[in-house]
Image (cartoon, rainbow, N blue to C red; front, top):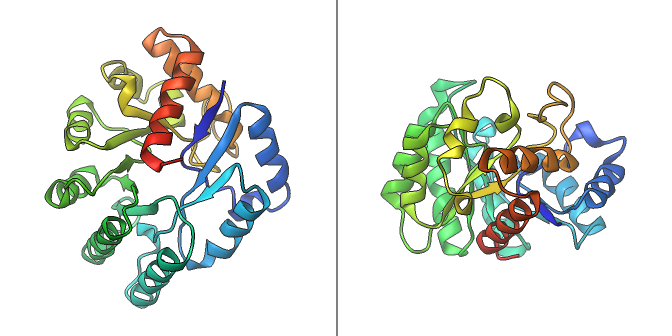
Length: 257
């Protein structure tokens, strides 16, 4: 069985002491492909170095995370994204979107950055990885307005209800990114996902964050994707091998792997 972790920040400082070991441990566990969404220009070099070290396993995205959208650096950061997409080898535009958990005051410039990066994704015919923490309604409204045959992607760390899921599915070409929250006892996400066809799902860890049960509260790693897959198999009462096959094919199709 082979799995794809569609969202992992293994280039971040939390892995400075054992980054290579974490990647090889994931590969040993069957998670042989790890997709790396960018955060800002500060992380680009380390992210690309990791991809160079594991060229058959790690693949980079390029984008500006909404939590790193700041008035004073917005122009230079978006220029960096555009230059990298024009000259580098990236599989998606991400991690982009909106975040109203930490700072609601920057919503308008977050929207500006989000829309500009969506247009870049269309221009380069790349999928998008969308961050929607406490901002699903605002983000999907933008996507619904800009949606066309050239737009596709994933709503990363989906934690919404069945109605939210249907809005994503109705876009066409978009998937729900399912991570460790699925395993949390009182999240309620399991009840929603039970109603959703697995054909609309891809798996992710968001390492080093949101480690699944029984590792909750610890540093997350890509190898723990298997725990998320096991929970999904349990919810849908199907074999783990079927979860591996379907979610892997979904990820390959979305990211053209």
